[in-house]
Length: 418
Image (tube, rainbow, N blue to C red; front, side):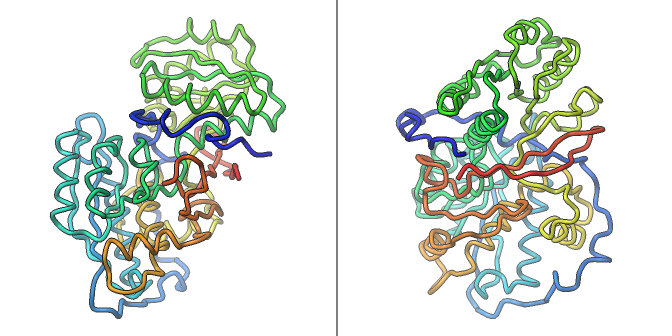
């Protein structure tokens, strides 16, 4: 069964114009994992993972990296370390990109500040980079127009704003929050659920995204969808949760940053919730896991990447690469999004032809088909604008669901919308 695409569900591009899509859900999130540190994978890694193929062409592919390091509230240096590890691996073993060495033109931390993000974007243009890879940010609306306006492709694993999601010069490897909402609607329909309640942080962007993107998807699935708002920093959400549970929903979801996750998850346990519980990635940050303990057991987290399935070839490759090229960086948390963003770019651009330039890189990305999504549990992506209409920049609409038991994610499963 497939959820009706956004356009068919009555959401036109103009509805999304100017709407920030819940950046906190998309970019402040740790992967559904135990946050483990490196585990000596390189020493026992399959030698075939490191074939030693070096670049042969003289002209490099000059890639800029923008990251959200140094912010007072959010700082994810591990995403940068993982992206650079992917570059080192490609240069040492994949022949770079199409035989061209990958050169990091610059690395610019935004501190998740609008002014700094604008400065970083302008530096990318001044550096005449062939492509920009953004590890994660909630400021894509500031960065993307400047970069794409200069003809430089904007690349990220997980977009959060309209300019990232709807520009023909932007490439977003996963569907992010819009596809999570559709995946939840599909899940509820497949389970035969009749009602679904989302506990959403009281933020215009989060509420707007849930209303404009979630409500039509659940309506198309024949599931009643309601929203209960929870202010950030709420110490005890029990009154809000208890009131919502009186409607006896078949499933509930938590959409918010760590304080909302902690408050709602604890309140669900206090209220004796028996409904199926779905969560977003901020709810598996270490601070949340430490605060809620066993209350998170039995929930399912929607995530764009899988680092828990140690028998998966993509996970083994990721672990081995990180152990060799970023041995001091924990692999279980934010690092995965930086690795996925850069390695997806490296794979998708391998078919580049002619003189290296932003135009030839863009052409290569648009022509790549069914590219394996790094640490994507078998998901592939194609950037032809059809994965999640009308979000033409999104290259895949599939998501990974992981179940939490004993405080750890298990049983990764792919939910495909198309």
